[in-house]
View 1 (tube, one colour):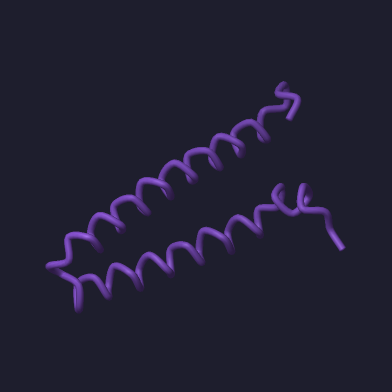
View 2 (cartoon, rainbow, N blue to C red):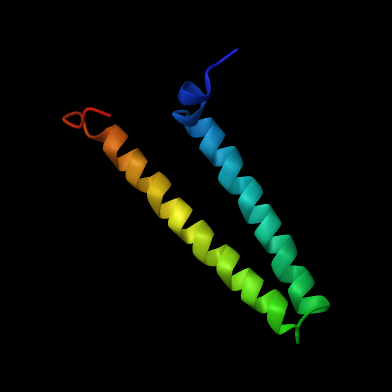
Length: 74
């Protein structure tokens, strides 16, 4: 069994994670268009989730840049 630290360093894990997140967001966005178009609460929650995901994606891409730099002691 792999340690969580080694799992987070694998590109396969992050591709699966972000593909899952994309699927969830596409479903949520589709449901918003079909059913909750006039729900201010749902649109606010969708906006907050998008903000958090954007911050998480930026953080993860920063870690990837650090990993690819041979002079960075990650």
